[in-house]
Length: 159
Image 1 (tube, rainbow, N blue to C red):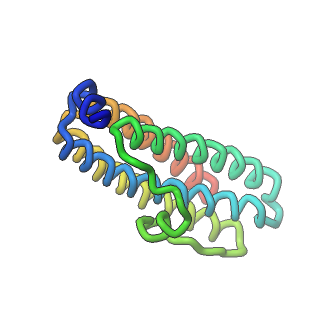
Image 2: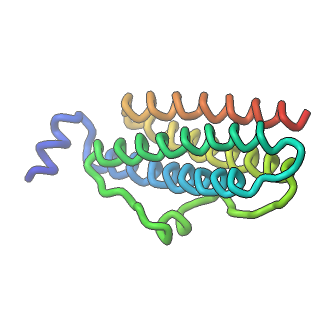
């Protein structure tokens, strides 16, 4: 009964909330995997660009941690539980883990991870748009812009 009352206040039908929760779970898995990947590279970067890249990656993984929290909270806001286990994230994530040792290869790998995450977000955006879920649309629009900015910065590093 509680779930039905909460749904009535949100204005989204049960089937629509389920669709949104499913696509956001994919986005969360990709975001969290990208967070771990970025933190791994932060810890393991070496070479002449160490200081700048080490700091940039720290800023990025901290931002991804905040983003993961916001996405998980949106899933809860549409009245669904959050998949919050490493096994669950590994099952859902399209972002691939790897451990290149050379800084430029790390950056290329991170760009690829951001591209995959943005693709998941764009698919989720279409779902949220189809059910008129403005809260999810706002969240995803903000996240897409942040990933696009990060990709620009990473590509600039390689230039």
